Image (cartoon, rainbow over all chains, first blue to last red):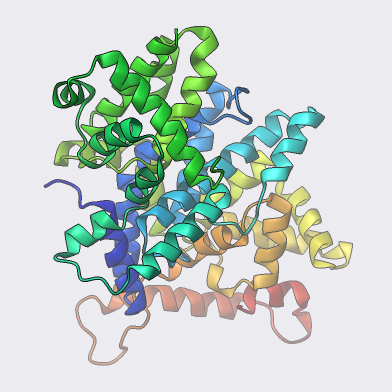
Length: 222
Length: 212
Protein backbone atom coordinates (compact mmCIF):
# COMPACT_ATOMS: atom_id res chain seq x y z
CA UNK A 1 0.00 0.00 0.00
CA UNK A 2 1.38 3.41 -0.96
CA UNK A 3 1.93 6.13 1.62
CA UNK A 4 -0.92 8.51 2.36
CA UNK A 5 -0.29 12.02 1.04
CA UNK A 6 1.13 14.47 3.56
CA UNK A 7 -1.77 16.97 3.38
CA UNK A 8 -4.23 14.22 4.26
CA UNK A 9 -2.07 12.91 7.12
CA UNK A 10 -1.65 16.41 8.51
CA UNK A 11 -5.39 17.06 8.51
CA UNK A 12 -6.11 13.73 10.16
CA UNK A 13 -3.43 14.51 12.73
CA UNK A 14 -4.96 17.92 13.46
CA UNK A 15 -8.47 16.43 13.68
CA UNK A 16 -7.29 13.69 16.04
CA UNK A 17 -5.55 16.30 18.18
CA UNK A 18 -8.70 18.44 18.29
CA UNK A 19 -10.73 15.43 19.40
CA UNK A 20 -8.22 14.71 22.15
CA UNK A 21 -7.20 11.37 20.58
CA UNK A 22 -3.55 11.81 21.36
CA UNK A 23 -2.42 8.28 20.62
CA UNK A 24 -3.92 8.44 17.13
CA UNK A 25 -2.43 11.92 16.63
CA UNK A 26 1.00 10.60 17.62
CA UNK A 27 0.71 7.74 15.14
CA UNK A 28 -0.27 10.08 12.31
CA UNK A 29 2.57 12.47 13.11
CA UNK A 30 5.00 9.59 13.03
CA UNK A 31 3.67 8.57 9.60
CA UNK A 32 4.30 12.14 8.46
CA UNK A 33 7.81 11.92 9.88
CA UNK A 34 8.46 8.66 8.03
CA UNK A 35 7.22 10.20 4.78
CA UNK A 36 9.59 13.12 5.29
CA UNK A 37 12.72 11.30 6.44
CA UNK A 38 14.43 11.64 3.06
CA UNK A 39 13.64 15.35 3.07
CA UNK A 40 15.30 15.74 6.48
CA UNK A 41 18.35 13.71 5.53
CA UNK A 42 18.87 15.43 2.19
CA UNK A 43 18.36 18.93 3.62
CA UNK A 44 21.17 18.21 6.08
CA UNK A 45 23.44 17.37 3.15
CA UNK A 46 22.38 20.41 1.10
CA UNK A 47 22.50 22.87 4.01
CA UNK A 48 24.85 25.85 3.68
CA UNK A 49 25.72 28.32 6.43
CA UNK A 50 25.61 31.24 4.03
CA UNK A 51 24.99 31.65 0.28
CA UNK A 52 27.88 30.02 -1.54
CA UNK A 53 29.46 29.09 1.79
CA UNK A 54 30.38 25.77 3.33
CA UNK A 55 27.96 23.15 4.54
CA UNK A 56 28.25 20.71 7.40
CA UNK A 57 31.31 18.48 7.23
CA UNK A 58 30.43 15.02 5.94
CA UNK A 59 31.32 13.33 9.24
CA UNK A 60 28.57 15.38 10.96
CA UNK A 61 25.75 14.50 8.54
CA UNK A 62 24.61 11.40 10.42
CA UNK A 63 24.56 13.02 13.85
CA UNK A 64 22.92 16.19 12.56
CA UNK A 65 20.25 14.19 10.69
CA UNK A 66 19.61 12.10 13.79
CA UNK A 67 19.14 15.15 16.00
CA UNK A 68 17.07 16.92 13.36
CA UNK A 69 14.79 13.91 12.96
CA UNK A 70 14.24 13.61 16.73
CA UNK A 71 13.41 17.33 16.84
CA UNK A 72 10.96 16.97 13.95
CA UNK A 73 9.13 14.18 15.77
CA UNK A 74 9.17 16.20 18.99
CA UNK A 75 7.65 19.13 17.09
CA UNK A 76 4.49 17.05 16.69
CA UNK A 77 3.43 17.39 20.30
CA UNK A 78 2.83 21.10 19.86
CA UNK A 79 2.18 21.58 16.13
CA UNK A 80 -1.29 23.00 15.49
CA UNK A 81 -1.31 24.14 11.86
CA UNK A 82 -3.35 22.29 9.26
CA UNK A 83 -1.64 23.60 6.14
CA UNK A 84 1.01 21.42 4.58
CA UNK A 85 3.02 24.49 3.60
CA UNK A 86 3.23 25.44 7.27
CA UNK A 87 4.34 21.92 8.11
CA UNK A 88 7.10 21.90 5.50
CA UNK A 89 8.28 25.38 6.48
CA UNK A 90 8.41 24.37 10.14
CA UNK A 91 10.22 21.15 9.26
CA UNK A 92 12.82 22.94 7.14
CA UNK A 93 13.38 25.54 9.88
CA UNK A 94 13.74 22.79 12.46
CA UNK A 95 16.28 20.88 10.36
CA UNK A 96 18.23 24.03 9.48
CA UNK A 97 18.34 25.02 13.16
CA UNK A 98 19.78 21.61 13.96
CA UNK A 99 22.39 22.10 11.22
CA UNK A 100 23.27 25.58 12.50
CA UNK A 101 23.58 24.21 16.02
CA UNK A 102 26.08 21.66 14.73
CA UNK A 103 27.84 24.40 12.84
CA UNK A 104 28.08 26.46 15.97
CA UNK A 105 30.31 23.78 17.38
CA UNK A 106 32.37 23.53 14.18
CA UNK A 107 32.67 27.26 13.69
CA UNK A 108 32.91 28.30 17.32
CA UNK A 109 36.16 30.12 16.76
CA UNK A 110 35.17 31.84 13.54
CA UNK A 111 33.68 35.10 14.72
CA UNK A 112 32.21 36.08 11.39
CA UNK A 113 30.48 32.78 10.81
CA UNK A 114 29.35 32.49 14.42
CA UNK A 115 27.79 35.93 14.15
CA UNK A 116 25.76 35.00 11.13
CA UNK A 117 24.58 31.82 12.82
CA UNK A 118 23.47 33.66 15.92
CA UNK A 119 21.56 36.21 13.88
CA UNK A 120 19.41 33.51 12.34
CA UNK A 121 18.72 31.65 15.58
CA UNK A 122 15.09 32.04 16.57
CA UNK A 123 14.28 29.87 19.55
CA UNK A 124 10.51 30.05 19.20
CA UNK A 125 10.15 30.63 15.47
CA UNK A 126 8.25 27.93 13.60
CA UNK A 127 8.54 28.93 9.98
CA UNK A 128 11.48 31.32 10.21
CA UNK A 129 12.36 32.97 6.92
CA UNK A 130 9.07 31.93 5.38
CA UNK A 131 6.89 33.88 7.82
CA UNK A 132 6.12 36.75 5.44
CA UNK A 133 5.13 34.52 2.54
CA UNK A 134 3.05 32.31 4.82
CA UNK A 135 1.20 35.34 6.17
CA UNK A 136 0.34 36.47 2.62
CA UNK A 137 -0.72 32.97 1.71
CA UNK A 138 -2.92 32.66 4.80
CA UNK A 139 -4.60 35.96 3.99
CA UNK A 140 -5.42 34.70 0.50
CA UNK A 141 -6.76 31.43 1.95
CA UNK A 142 -9.08 33.37 4.25
CA UNK A 143 -10.40 35.33 1.27
CA UNK A 144 -11.14 32.09 -0.56
CA UNK A 145 -12.62 30.37 2.49
CA UNK A 146 -16.21 30.76 1.33
CA UNK A 147 -15.68 29.30 -2.12
CA UNK A 148 -17.25 25.93 -2.83
CA UNK A 149 -14.91 23.04 -3.51
CA UNK A 150 -15.83 19.78 -5.16
CA UNK A 151 -13.82 17.27 -3.19
CA UNK A 152 -11.49 16.98 -0.25
CA UNK A 153 -8.60 16.05 -2.51
CA UNK A 154 -9.01 18.97 -4.88
CA UNK A 155 -9.24 21.29 -1.91
CA UNK A 156 -6.04 19.87 -0.47
CA UNK A 157 -4.27 20.27 -3.80
CA UNK A 158 -5.56 23.80 -4.30
CA UNK A 159 -4.48 24.89 -0.85
CA UNK A 160 -0.90 23.80 -1.23
CA UNK A 161 1.46 26.63 -0.59
CA UNK A 162 3.53 25.59 -3.57
CA UNK A 163 0.58 26.01 -5.92
CA UNK A 164 0.07 29.49 -4.56
CA UNK A 165 3.76 30.34 -4.88
CA UNK A 166 3.97 29.14 -8.50
CA UNK A 167 1.06 31.40 -9.39
CA UNK A 168 3.08 34.37 -8.08
CA UNK A 169 6.06 33.71 -10.42
CA UNK A 170 5.94 36.55 -12.95
CA UNK A 171 7.61 34.80 -15.90
CA UNK A 172 4.97 32.77 -17.75
CA UNK A 173 7.47 30.34 -19.28
CA UNK A 174 8.98 29.54 -15.90
CA UNK A 175 5.51 29.24 -14.37
CA UNK A 176 4.44 26.74 -17.02
CA UNK A 177 7.44 24.45 -16.38
CA UNK A 178 7.06 24.78 -12.60
CA UNK A 179 3.41 23.72 -12.78
CA UNK A 180 4.29 20.69 -14.90
CA UNK A 181 7.15 19.81 -12.53
CA UNK A 182 5.57 20.40 -9.12
CA UNK A 183 1.87 19.86 -9.70
CA UNK A 184 1.64 17.39 -12.58
CA UNK A 185 4.98 15.85 -11.56
CA UNK A 186 6.11 15.36 -15.16
CA UNK A 187 9.70 14.36 -15.77
CA UNK A 188 12.04 16.65 -17.69
CA UNK A 189 11.70 14.45 -20.75
CA UNK A 190 7.90 14.57 -20.59
CA UNK A 191 7.99 18.36 -20.33
CA UNK A 192 10.25 18.51 -23.38
CA UNK A 193 7.65 16.52 -25.32
CA UNK A 194 4.65 18.41 -23.92
CA UNK A 195 6.01 21.89 -24.64
CA UNK A 196 8.16 21.11 -27.68
CA UNK A 197 11.21 22.88 -26.26
CA UNK A 198 14.80 21.69 -25.84
CA UNK A 199 15.96 19.78 -22.74
CA UNK A 200 18.39 22.61 -21.91
CA UNK A 201 15.45 25.01 -21.95
CA UNK A 202 13.54 22.82 -19.50
CA UNK A 203 16.57 22.58 -17.19
CA UNK A 204 17.06 26.34 -17.25
CA UNK A 205 13.40 27.15 -16.63
CA UNK A 206 13.23 24.69 -13.75
CA UNK A 207 16.34 26.15 -12.18
CA UNK A 208 15.54 29.83 -12.67
CA UNK A 209 11.83 29.41 -11.96
CA UNK A 210 12.71 27.50 -8.80
CA UNK A 211 14.88 30.38 -7.64
CA UNK A 212 12.06 32.86 -8.21
CA UNK A 213 9.68 30.63 -6.30
CA UNK A 214 12.10 30.34 -3.41
CA UNK A 215 12.44 34.13 -3.26
CA UNK A 216 8.65 34.45 -3.21
CA UNK A 217 8.35 31.88 -0.44
CA UNK A 218 10.94 33.77 1.54
CA UNK A 219 8.94 36.95 1.14
CA UNK A 220 11.75 38.66 -0.73
CA UNK A 221 9.89 39.54 -3.87
CA UNK A 222 11.80 41.91 -6.08
CA UNK B 1 28.72 25.22 -17.21
CA UNK B 2 25.36 26.47 -15.91
CA UNK B 3 23.60 24.01 -18.21
CA UNK B 4 25.39 21.14 -16.50
CA UNK B 5 24.26 22.32 -13.07
CA UNK B 6 20.72 22.85 -14.30
CA UNK B 7 20.67 19.41 -15.89
CA UNK B 8 21.79 17.76 -12.65
CA UNK B 9 19.16 19.69 -10.69
CA UNK B 10 16.55 18.56 -13.19
CA UNK B 11 17.64 14.94 -12.80
CA UNK B 12 17.35 15.22 -9.02
CA UNK B 13 13.83 16.67 -9.35
CA UNK B 14 12.76 13.82 -11.65
CA UNK B 15 14.24 11.20 -9.30
CA UNK B 16 12.57 12.79 -6.27
CA UNK B 17 9.15 13.12 -7.90
CA UNK B 18 9.22 9.50 -9.04
CA UNK B 19 10.12 8.27 -5.53
CA UNK B 20 13.60 6.99 -6.44
CA UNK B 21 15.05 8.55 -3.25
CA UNK B 22 17.90 10.55 -4.82
CA UNK B 23 20.99 11.55 -2.84
CA UNK B 24 22.03 15.20 -2.65
CA UNK B 25 25.68 14.38 -2.14
CA UNK B 26 25.88 12.15 -5.15
CA UNK B 27 24.26 14.80 -7.37
CA UNK B 28 26.37 17.68 -6.02
CA UNK B 29 29.54 15.65 -6.57
CA UNK B 30 28.69 15.36 -10.27
CA UNK B 31 28.62 19.16 -10.73
CA UNK B 32 31.72 21.20 -11.65
CA UNK B 33 33.51 22.22 -8.45
CA UNK B 34 32.72 25.91 -8.86
CA UNK B 35 28.98 25.19 -9.24
CA UNK B 36 28.53 22.84 -6.29
CA UNK B 37 27.56 25.43 -3.68
CA UNK B 38 24.94 26.94 -5.99
CA UNK B 39 23.55 23.51 -6.88
CA UNK B 40 23.31 22.64 -3.17
CA UNK B 41 21.31 25.81 -2.60
CA UNK B 42 19.00 25.00 -5.49
CA UNK B 43 18.49 21.50 -4.16
CA UNK B 44 17.77 22.88 -0.70
CA UNK B 45 15.18 25.27 -2.17
CA UNK B 46 13.55 22.37 -4.01
CA UNK B 47 13.55 20.12 -0.94
CA UNK B 48 12.04 22.86 1.20
CA UNK B 49 8.71 22.73 -0.55
CA UNK B 50 8.68 19.78 -2.95
CA UNK B 51 5.64 17.56 -2.44
CA UNK B 52 6.54 14.25 -0.82
CA UNK B 53 6.66 11.46 -3.40
CA UNK B 54 4.06 8.72 -3.20
CA UNK B 55 6.24 5.98 -1.73
CA UNK B 56 5.40 2.34 -2.33
CA UNK B 57 5.26 -0.27 0.41
CA UNK B 58 8.84 -1.43 -0.16
CA UNK B 59 10.19 2.14 0.00
CA UNK B 60 8.29 2.84 3.21
CA UNK B 61 9.62 -0.36 4.75
CA UNK B 62 13.15 0.67 3.73
CA UNK B 63 12.68 4.12 5.28
CA UNK B 64 11.31 2.63 8.50
CA UNK B 65 14.34 0.34 8.64
CA UNK B 66 16.80 3.26 8.45
CA UNK B 67 18.61 3.32 11.82
CA UNK B 68 17.69 6.95 12.49
CA UNK B 69 13.99 6.33 11.82
CA UNK B 70 13.80 3.00 13.64
CA UNK B 71 15.60 4.47 16.65
CA UNK B 72 13.42 7.57 16.81
CA UNK B 73 10.15 5.67 16.46
CA UNK B 74 11.17 3.18 19.14
CA UNK B 75 12.27 5.97 21.49
CA UNK B 76 8.99 7.85 21.01
CA UNK B 77 7.12 4.96 22.63
CA UNK B 78 9.30 4.86 25.74
CA UNK B 79 8.38 6.17 29.14
CA UNK B 80 10.55 9.27 28.89
CA UNK B 81 9.42 10.02 25.34
CA UNK B 82 12.23 11.29 23.11
CA UNK B 83 14.04 13.17 25.87
CA UNK B 84 16.39 10.30 26.80
CA UNK B 85 17.41 10.11 23.13
CA UNK B 86 17.52 13.85 22.45
CA UNK B 87 18.93 15.38 25.62
CA UNK B 88 22.34 13.61 25.63
CA UNK B 89 22.78 14.54 21.95
CA UNK B 90 22.07 18.19 22.62
CA UNK B 91 24.32 18.17 25.67
CA UNK B 92 27.21 16.48 23.89
CA UNK B 93 26.82 18.75 20.89
CA UNK B 94 27.30 21.69 23.28
CA UNK B 95 30.39 19.88 24.62
CA UNK B 96 28.91 19.71 28.12
CA UNK B 97 29.16 16.90 30.64
CA UNK B 98 26.16 16.18 32.83
CA UNK B 99 27.81 18.09 35.68
CA UNK B 100 28.55 21.07 33.45
CA UNK B 101 24.98 21.12 32.16
CA UNK B 102 23.75 20.97 35.75
CA UNK B 103 25.98 23.92 36.64
CA UNK B 104 24.63 25.93 33.69
CA UNK B 105 21.09 24.96 34.58
CA UNK B 106 21.47 25.92 38.22
CA UNK B 107 22.80 29.30 37.08
CA UNK B 108 19.96 29.79 34.61
CA UNK B 109 17.41 28.89 37.28
CA UNK B 110 18.99 31.20 39.84
CA UNK B 111 19.59 28.37 42.31
CA UNK B 112 22.48 28.21 44.80
CA UNK B 113 25.55 26.47 43.42
CA UNK B 114 25.36 23.76 46.11
CA UNK B 115 22.35 22.37 44.21
CA UNK B 116 24.46 21.37 41.21
CA UNK B 117 25.06 17.76 42.31
CA UNK B 118 21.37 17.13 42.95
CA UNK B 119 20.44 18.74 39.62
CA UNK B 120 23.02 16.57 37.86
CA UNK B 121 21.34 13.53 39.41
CA UNK B 122 17.99 14.54 37.97
CA UNK B 123 19.53 15.16 34.54
CA UNK B 124 21.05 11.67 34.64
CA UNK B 125 17.68 10.15 35.55
CA UNK B 126 16.08 12.11 32.73
CA UNK B 127 18.67 10.90 30.22
CA UNK B 128 18.24 7.33 31.46
CA UNK B 129 14.48 7.51 30.97
CA UNK B 130 13.86 7.10 34.69
CA UNK B 131 12.08 10.41 35.18
CA UNK B 132 8.57 11.21 34.02
CA UNK B 133 8.89 14.34 31.80
CA UNK B 134 5.36 15.45 32.66
CA UNK B 135 6.55 16.13 36.20
CA UNK B 136 9.27 18.56 35.15
CA UNK B 137 8.37 22.22 35.52
CA UNK B 138 8.22 24.61 32.60
CA UNK B 139 10.97 26.66 34.26
CA UNK B 140 13.36 23.74 33.82
CA UNK B 141 12.42 23.36 30.15
CA UNK B 142 12.85 27.11 29.67
CA UNK B 143 16.29 27.05 31.24
CA UNK B 144 17.36 23.89 29.39
CA UNK B 145 16.26 25.43 26.10
CA UNK B 146 18.33 28.54 26.76
CA UNK B 147 21.41 26.60 27.79
CA UNK B 148 21.18 24.13 24.89
CA UNK B 149 19.99 26.80 22.42
CA UNK B 150 16.96 24.95 21.14
CA UNK B 151 13.30 26.00 21.09
CA UNK B 152 11.59 25.11 24.36
CA UNK B 153 8.68 23.64 22.43
CA UNK B 154 10.92 20.96 20.94
CA UNK B 155 12.23 19.89 24.35
CA UNK B 156 8.78 19.90 25.90
CA UNK B 157 7.43 18.09 22.86
CA UNK B 158 10.11 15.43 23.16
CA UNK B 159 8.96 14.82 26.71
CA UNK B 160 5.28 15.14 25.95
CA UNK B 161 5.48 12.21 23.56
CA UNK B 162 5.52 9.99 26.63
CA UNK B 163 2.07 11.35 27.43
CA UNK B 164 0.64 10.46 24.03
CA UNK B 165 -0.42 7.05 25.29
CA UNK B 166 -3.76 6.15 26.87
CA UNK B 167 -4.63 8.75 29.46
CA UNK B 168 -6.46 6.62 31.97
CA UNK B 169 -7.14 2.98 32.63
CA UNK B 170 -9.99 1.58 34.65
CA UNK B 171 -8.82 -0.22 37.76
CA UNK B 172 -12.03 -2.18 38.24
CA UNK B 173 -13.81 -4.17 35.52
CA UNK B 174 -10.44 -4.22 33.78
CA UNK B 175 -10.15 -5.36 30.20
CA UNK B 176 -7.35 -7.51 28.83
CA UNK B 177 -5.02 -4.57 28.19
CA UNK B 178 -5.54 -2.86 31.55
CA UNK B 179 -2.21 -4.03 32.93
CA UNK B 180 -0.26 -2.41 30.12
CA UNK B 181 -2.31 0.75 30.26
CA UNK B 182 -1.92 1.03 34.03
CA UNK B 183 1.82 0.35 34.07
CA UNK B 184 2.82 3.93 33.34
CA UNK B 185 0.64 5.27 36.13
CA UNK B 186 2.01 2.74 38.59
CA UNK B 187 5.53 3.79 37.60
CA UNK B 188 4.56 7.40 38.23
CA UNK B 189 3.26 6.43 41.64
CA UNK B 190 6.53 4.60 42.26
CA UNK B 191 8.47 7.76 41.41
CA UNK B 192 6.35 9.75 43.79
CA UNK B 193 6.95 7.27 46.58
CA UNK B 194 10.69 7.32 45.91
CA UNK B 195 10.88 11.11 45.93
CA UNK B 196 11.98 12.75 49.14
CA UNK B 197 9.20 14.54 50.98
CA UNK B 198 8.80 16.81 53.96
CA UNK B 199 11.83 18.73 55.11
CA UNK B 200 14.21 16.88 52.79
CA UNK B 201 12.46 18.16 49.72
CA UNK B 202 13.83 21.37 48.24
CA UNK B 203 13.33 23.61 45.23
CA UNK B 204 15.26 21.25 42.93
CA UNK B 205 12.86 18.43 43.80
CA UNK B 206 9.92 20.70 43.15
CA UNK B 207 11.33 21.74 39.77
CA UNK B 208 11.88 18.15 38.63
CA UNK B 209 8.98 16.41 40.32
CA UNK B 210 6.34 19.06 40.89
CA UNK B 211 4.85 19.09 37.41
CA UNK B 212 4.09 22.09 35.19
